[in-house]
Length: 511
Image (cartoon, rainbow, N blue to C red):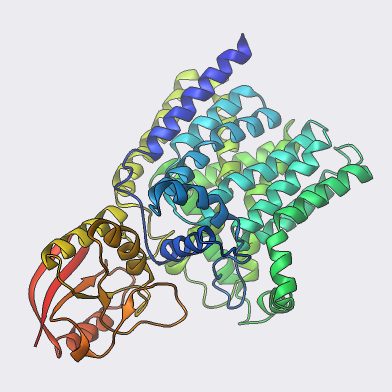
């Protein structure tokens, strides 16, 4: 009966999480260059051309895993190329973290801590953002939870199956976001530090775990064999070369990012985050010498493992203004579990105060959700904001209806510059399907990127009617925009301009 009650509570929290993640769907679906490249990759898979490498990382030559392409494939197939179903899948997948974090919290402490953790996970602004993040790191939140769930089962339940589950989570994390390779370090540290707390891992369990791990990263192995171990040769350069390390930069950027995690999960405000951080740190130190010191140490390894990223990349070029948040995937779950334990302890003494703190956390997170989520993902996840699929469809409808079934040329001030993949996918999937024909891309287009629009750079060969799409300009230097428009004015006149969301569409005519 008690178990049934807990299940229904978790089911209610899960449904609450689903509602929050679909609150503004489908108007909040972000669709920029990364989403277009992923969509083209899925399209090729559906056409019978399998992939063994994922998208490029920020380090030249290294690639992310390919798994998420295949996870998206059935949803693109069902939707006829519509990205919306895949975006919906990511939101449901993220909400499933409610159950995983409950289990981890219950294993480390008790079911009450697990329930509080599941509620804080459901309401977390950060988690709703990862749910909206239509890209491969989104699912890494779940894979990191799986890894630490396995470790908690191994250490605190003394069950060998936890070793296999942990290696599954580790392999999936690396597959979904290459930067999460750093998790190998906390994985090993945890095993070493808690080696006396779990049963001996026999050969059968070890081989099974290793097989699962190798299976999850098998696409990397296949790619290495095909491309002569390219990544193996590049990794030492990433780890041991580059600019000199800067301790000041490492500490300052790491502390800033910890503040962001606290803000996006607890306080909802940068002003209160430092105070909350100091209080939590003091409590963590006190609990490290208490009866739950093993659980506290486990959560410390989990939470502070993020520092590894900054140690590896800790050069003078580190800048808090350009930090990307996707490397934080899964880290906040440890913070949520720790805070849930504190709230449970507080509730045993002063129930009203614990309830009030929970309400304040919910309000703080919901204010951020209400403020940011209607416009898609925050700039910490996608540098170019407001690239909403709903607005892009309106842009295409406006252009086609204005063209009135006549041929036209189109081009865009895009990020990155001179890459038409985003608009090419939209015109091929939506425009051609609805209106029956495609435009000519009337300008420069970088080679090596997917897209099937006919490109014509010779101005005298273009149709008289032309359209210039100006994407949301955050992330695009103003001088580049001015130069682009100046050059465009040599060949055509803007006769009308319409704003759609944060996009601008200029109707232009040949001079």
